[in-house]
Amino acid sequence: MAKITFIGAGSTVFAQNLLGDILSYPELADSEIHLYDIDAERLSTSEIVARKIADALKIKPTIVATTDRDRALDGADYAINMIQVGGYKPCTVTDFELPKKYGLRQTIADTLGIGGIMRGLRTIPVLVGMARDMERLCPDVLHLNYVNPMAMNCWALNRASPIRTVGLCHSVRGTAAQLARDIGVPVEEINYLAAGINHIAFYLKFERNGEDLYPLIRKVAQDGRVPEDNRVRYDLLQRFGHFVTESSEHFSEYVPWYIKRDRPEAIERLNIPLDEYIRRCEVNIAEWQQTQAEMEDPKTVIQAVRSNEYASEIIHSRETGISRVVYGNVINRGSITNLPADCCVEVPCLVDGNGVQPVTVGEIPMHLAALMQTSINVQRLTVEAALTGDRSHVYHAAMLDPHTAAELGPDQIWSLVDELIEAHGEWLPASLRHAA
Image 1 (cartoon, rainbow, N blue to C red):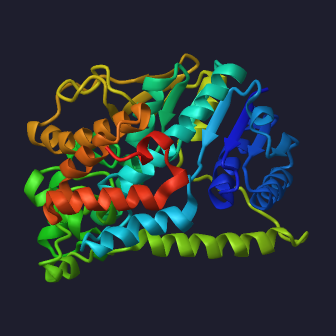
Image 2 (cartoon, one colour):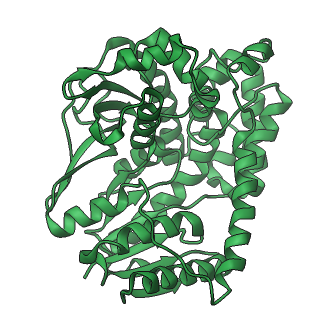
């Protein structure tokens, strides 16, 4: 019987998806589920959800909800992490509002850009602290991380701790389904290979029975059938020749070309949703409040519907030995030969009873690797700052960030970093709060 611990289980809607995935496997139906969060109210709602899922599936797993992290982690076989350090308020709002003073606009701000840098700086020390607890309480655990900034977090964790960490993101699978709809081919008939770094991976192959489907994808643009929310990615396809795995709203802020304050017409033409994550957070908060009210009603019944997340598949494969391929964020170590060996890459991974085993992709197209390298530079400096406390690397990361550097000069970047560090205050390590 596997012990599966949810860290940040107060993320009720996401926890519900993963719980439904895991418990719907008969081989995992008797799992020991430990739900951990620092917010007792949210945790209580997630516990109700877990029990309703078990009732719907007519199974009897062990379900424990606790605000005691040691209890949750003690002896865990799997730890699924879904925390958000600093929350929507104050930290996410700060990451958007302060840059706006300088004319720097963002869409999501959780992966790269100045928002991604600050999110990494406040998240990495917390994750490393959790890894230290795992070393003490469950040294053989498989840590499945869903927390952004994905690449920075996984890079830092694998460098700072021997705990096995794999980062999981649904962008590869989700985008494949979107493309399948765009070209009118059933996704189950499509075979694809993607590789890169999280949110900047590209489909190197997109085929059906050996037939290259890229001509059909390009025809979507030629025929004027590009979905309104995908204009940036189709524009990039025309220029780079491959389709990127993360959404247009995400990708637009990873490069210097799309969000330009002196080109508002381009932002409108490409339908780039500035401040999108702020809106999503508000929607998520309202959704959680509705979920809480519904769950408190004893008459509410939950149906377990499978999501497209990888966590349950990894757990099931490791417990049963059934082989699967998933996409994981892991330390490179030669999987992509023309990216740094120590960076975090997103590649296919074979999963079976032996664990998660990254596939060797080899060399990817030179221009794709060059694009990824601009993000890897920022990731490396942010990880270094978070692990060593050297504040100078925060300035360097911000200056090398493609979108930030395209909009602001050195003095502005330096001043913005100072303001953000001061505003985040207690959410950052003390070493970073001292002026460089």
